[in-house]
Length: 266
Image (cartoon, rainbow, N blue to C red):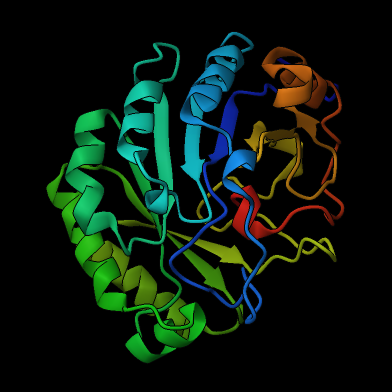
């Protein structure tokens, strides 16, 4: 379905939780965050209903995000239910990789097609600092498990803190190339100030060709990451919320004050 600027809206990103097992410095404040209550989080039935409605308007690509989606209890079952929707021909997940060793094979068997893993450095100490305590070896084991389970492509998302740090970028590129992964570099973004740019190695951040809608963990359809425009699927119903989001999708992103990366899925 085309929006007001003739962009074909075909991609739905679904945040299934605002919870995460890491505390990355660019995502969460050091004191932590106020989490949504259990009743505020969409159930799997509600999520699947939104997807079924969305595909009737031309959505064919779905990506599951968080927070960290693998901490959501029953996530494999949700993947299976979405994979069974015939019109979804591209089903992916973005994860920090910490739990991927445990879930990779089951996710593949459930019908997941692609995986993106967040990895900003190869240095164990720096990784622990960025994530406030994460163990990089868990990520390496998760990536290996995903490869052994038959996922292809496997993409690495690396947040760039210093665009002039070519040494770090080259090390990540070499690691990806040597292991058969694809690498994408994402400039550090700021929702409040509106700082974002086109993803290096991907299509994100290019407003002129943006084909995305976002479903937040608490049930709002957002037409733009850098906007406060949102429509509740619980109050309006999935159909009206989706149509409203498409018709009100802005030409370009500006700022967002009502959400954070940990509860909107990036």
